[in-house]
Length: 528
Image 1 (tube, one colour):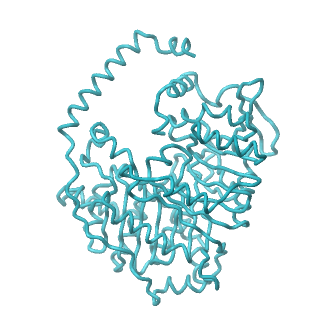
Image 2 (cartoon, rainbow, N blue to C red):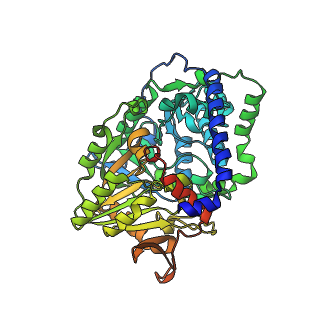
Image 3 (tube, rainbow, N blue to C red):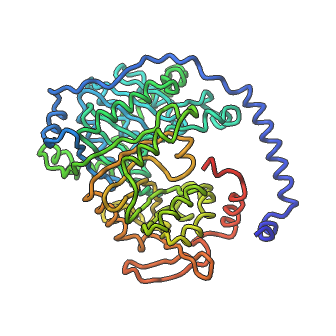
């Protein structure tokens, strides 16, 4: 491998590049020292979820669905991307009292702008809106944030913010320890009576619009016992010491840029590329089902598993997330199905999975292939563990990617259409209970970012999830096997007939494979 890399990257090229990189880094660090301002003194007014208004029409509509057992949660799975958009838009338009939102990514694209416009209209109706965004991905949103925050019924806060709004990367050079921690949570709570949580951020790629990659993802809409707990969890983050009022960070004076941003917001419904969403909204039966109490809620015991916001300050314990998760899910007795777009099991995790396999538990893992992943360097943290896992009789599947842009994913479960990239984070234990949330199976989720999700104890929902994944698994993924001690990738057709066996990672170049192999030599696993 070293000889191959030397042929591809001769020393006469590598050495000057390496020296240039060192010099550039030093100069950037010196510049950043003067360019980055410290965080301002926090000026935050604490607030909390509003009490439920029994006269609220949405509250009345949903409370009629409640079973006799007050400890149960009604769950509606949202695997179809357009359904996931519609559910959010419908709830924002039905809101009468309050909307609380917490997201890692909110794109200023078509779907993101449409949902922001829904928020603005809700505020115009008198609804209190609290929007908490992780600041790592708000580039291009500052003017829209300022417009929203200017409304008396909307408050926007930025979690763990960057003080230099133009050259954010400089912050990593001077304040990596703080800025490396991100709020990865995804949550929407409406009127304190219903919520949506899971793996989706806000953006076209999560809702199957546009010409780009479609993320195969999973959310759940919930009513009942779990919703007040989700509201309380939102309050923890909203009032945390890393949640800064937007006006303290986005300090640009109101002017022509903000007027243009408001016009973008106001005119979004007239854009040519909103047709997919408008059609989905027009055809959706969700609103009708809500009014006629015809939603097939899966009434379950649900347990909220959530990191404390202090994890973003480096203050955390395994007892905050993993112990409650284990207590809720328990040991696998027969089968464990793991779905994670970024799968970096580490030595400890690999040993744990091998131990389970030795006990006779059937373990399957679905993750992204190199061609399907949207974060290529994370793949380097995964590839060194494949062989050990397969040797332990653990089945490894890697979602493939082709060019068929099929937006409707209902019939494909969590393996989606071709042209997809896996983004769902879930696992199913013994076809009896499952976890749905923001947690990736990698060191970053485990130790750096804050995460959340629901453990759902429902055999029907768990088995249905597993069945739908398996139904199209071989058709939509590569099965990674060992043959003569070498990794091979098997490609099957929709009849599960073997079409082809690859000796190297499918649809990758020598350069890509060399780069990924090079990254495995770097001590970066803890960052992945």
